[in-house]
Image 1: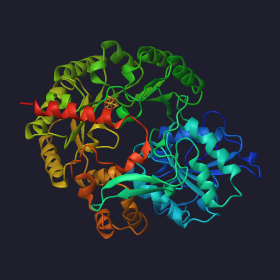
Image 2 (image 1 turned 60 degrees about the horizontal axis):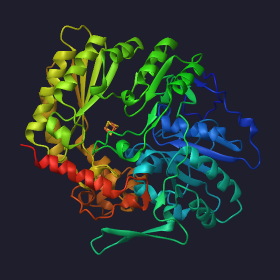
Image 3 (image 1 turned 180 degrees about the horizontal axis):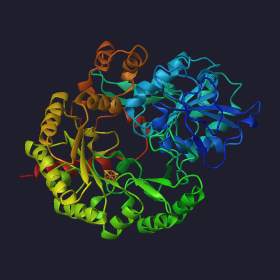
Image 4 (image 1 turned 90 degrees about the horizontal axis):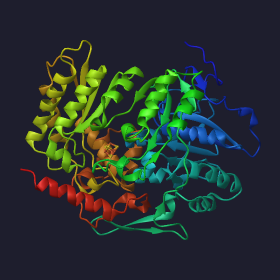
Length: 557
Ligand code: SF4
């Protein structure tokens, strides 16, 4: 058992890891009688939560508030510490606010399990004036929080900087009010969606035709905007998935406009963090860590990407990067990456066929990819990860067969003649994500995904220095349902989270037809559950991009 150098630890702690606070350990003694207590929860493990930049950013924002006492909580299944805070073991039911940061739809079930373990009435409608306010932010709040709307007092959508301080002020000033009035006050905040104030209107077939807002609640709710700071880790941990690594956001959003990608749709316009600011943060943390992860959708689109890499090299940091656009890799970039200790680079061709790649909005040629691979090999990079998807719209047998062919060509360029070099191939199933141009399209069924994965798995058997991993068909479909569903999913989520009912049985028992959610193409005018919140871009723009993609699919020979 390792010694914990910072922070308190008691019998309730769920973590036993060394933590290093980058800007000083929070002073918990400052608690005043009227301070707002917040439990910030990541609905998955400590290891993943501490490696999540969104979670770390909100933690930093909350700790910076003068009258907030913030502790953390995680989902640790079956642990005696479940439903309690990490720092003091306080039951979550004793906090003023329980705030979830949710990045993955698959964590919706964990979120409900955390509420249950914390002794908090699960549904917002069951809570009394004495219960904490349950709020949620993060990527899933942006994309579609409707599957967990029944469990939320408020969903916070937008920049954390524009949301946290106003939220705390409202919570503090409304303490003496009845819960219903507090929720109305919350609804007046920019970016706050209070689900209980909205009804979903449906036609006789159950299709959504619109939403009705109670009183003065805004419809649609719009994301809170405002200047945002560079997101950065506030605490390092040797128990994080990215152990002791400073995470820095070098840009937000992506202008490439791939038709399947929510980051490219929702997080626009792009914001670049100046190289000076990025390097300043590395320097400030240099005495505590030399490991830095750059979090960005497209590092090499950054106008100062070279300055950032050169600066990192000067500072002697060991870099980790999320993924790169292969067509932007130059010999100089490869050399710098290697010199900064980057051993693994991830590129995402998405599919094996060039014309399908063009139709999904990622027009990268095989020649450009292979040239980039040669450049990376010459630069000395050791591991190359390739991401592909199956179940893309218009996909044909030959598109699937093209995946191992392209991977083989990549392998020849990257591995042959180089000791220790390897290629790993990761394949997931396409999910038509909310707020993307492809949101109108159906998802492939489970049998199709399973057959494709099975074909690919066999195609990669026996290839030296090449690994294959593929998402399970069942898990992929569950992700699709959770990503695209509406309020009808709340009982299935509760059954799975609290009673341990297997997902498909939970859907059956709660009368949910998964195919109605993900198995059918949508009419242009169909209303989606997530449209009660408007985070942009306009639906006309998405629809135009969809039609352009479908035209390209039609033109394929
Ligand atoms: S897939 Fe990558 S390049 Fe395309 S829009 Fe998304 S983040 Fe940008």
